[in-house]
Length: 271
Image (cartoon, rainbow, N blue to C red):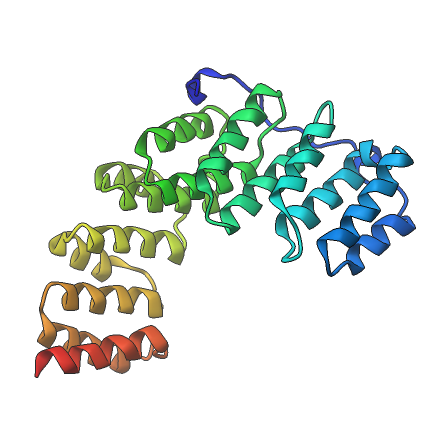
């Protein structure tokens, strides 16, 4: 596969409303009622016969059913994509999402590559799916190329994308890169703090973990669970119990199932 970073593309532009919002019709209404693949195939055949399948909005609805629905088929979703001369961004995004849902991240990356070659315009949804695929693959090289694209087009400051980047680097063991993204952000939400916290925990950096936890402006149950899970992983059962008690005393959040499971595991292992 050619280097993704070597393929230029411009900042995403909105698709003209006239291209994506045709009048609703009976075929699309029937598509919403489908509960079996063969029913969608029949509607698809009618849309091909009437040339409706060449309409971007109608094709997008078909692709969405095939790629996302429990009654769909990624094979047919790809047929919809290939049938269009200039597939719009949202159809590529739909197929990337569908492949991620079916635990096929490599195909999502291939779709991203096809998208660039087709000169379709990636948007923040595209990069969200691509980063998630890269994380599932634990592919640092692909992650670096995606990051380069994001910086080039000014999308790296999007909070959701930033959190995905932090998580990607942390999962791949590149804490220094995760820190650069984290420290370079002016506004950090709880997800960003937790992503960085989990990165330190996964890489068993206890000193940085406790330092970050102490600096968090707010904590939720994920933050506390991360700390307890770290102590259990390190065999520090007394510390885990103390963390659980501190959580209760802080009144910052209520325990969830993960918390209670961690508590039970602490009790068993500490006996």
